[in-house]
Length: 372
Image 1 (cartoon, rainbow, N blue to C red):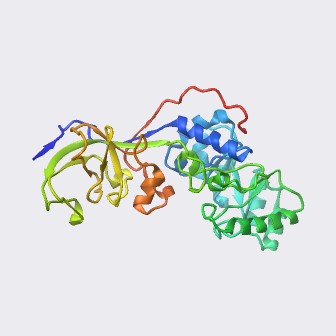
Image 2: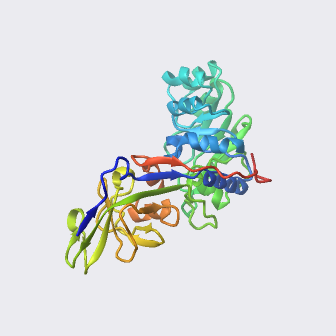
Image 3: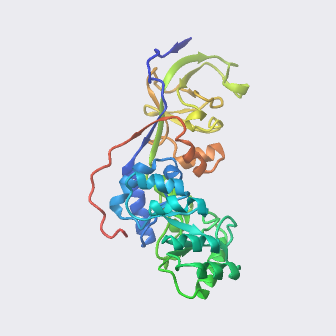
């Protein structure tokens, strides 16, 4: 027997709720661990959480600056009335310099000609040293390019490097730090700001002698260093209504590919959420949603717009809400594990289609002793 929900506009909609209070709590926890000012990364619309919400939430914490990936992101952030410094971490091209200067952005540069052109406009620049990531920055062993960059214009506002495996228990951080420190020692003067630590490095307790830290995904509820003792507050909740119920019998299959087969009479709920809403297609391989106070497993592959749950043991009616992430359901990290994907990829994919709302920020006095 099948029952479907009435056709009401907006009734069958996945919902993503962002909790600013959790972002604030995670920022403060990371600031305490780092013991230095933070430069929060808000690139990619704050990892899909929503840059406007994050900036409004964290501005009272007085971060050192905001980190974005592109000049376009920096301009958009400034148009949100974001005050303070904004650093563009992806190397920028000269054709973007006019827009960047008009918005008061600071750029990460790695070509001497770009440094000369940008500083001639009066812009502040930052020097990234590539100590093993092989993505951006001046190589730690390329003294010629380094010297040319430093001679091309004003001194850099900061020098930094990026760990490629801070979330892995190996010696790579030590190797990168040794390379970084070798270059630092050879610089004609130490820049005003030197930084290395991302979220994983902060949680691991990386050397705290640097001038700031650059947390990203930790702000948004994911701890990439799983051997640590920090559990971040959950920032996002992903939920959707049950829109249909049916009973299947032994041998019946559910969803594409017939990958799930009933071993007896089972009650199946269809929920208005799918991979177009950011729920990975393979979430049936271990993901459990929460329906009321009961946990119900996903069965059959997730489809574009709908996902099925086995609610045989869960009181469930059409219109009830099924929660897939947050609020007692899976964390982003757990969802990523089930999907065999990076939590960064899962989190940034959640903005796809789900209706978005922002919870109220809990009123709370600032925590004494937090670095600002």
